[in-house]
Image (cartoon, rainbow, N blue to C red; front, side, top):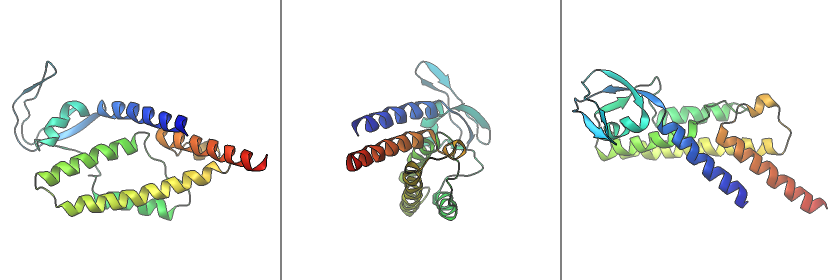
Length: 183
């Protein structure tokens, strides 16, 4: 079990690093002067303009409500509820991007920041958390079930990179348990 924990922890850190360097498109909602971040000037930003920068560079502006992430699906509790319902209604795993969970984790921080700044009510985070836990429960149950069988390459391709590690861990634990009982 220790090996599984180590693999997941180190892998999640690598995924977080990848996500932090991911290029995102933001829209400026409030003018901002240029700031110096690690010897690099970022900005200025003009209201109404869009910018494409790595997440780590733009994160301080998001946290201070100078820019907002531009996306087709603004992440909120309704979107997570939709993910959970789609997962519940489908017997198969629904394919997600390899850094899906890390992105959700970072976006949860943004929701917390919006609550602290009075932009959205605290209830939004509570609903977000409940829907996310329901979604995770469904995904984990499906992965656990897959680990007791021999899934096809197509089915394994629906797992996120993090879920693949979890699958291998479940598979290994189940195999060890069976060997212990049967031998």
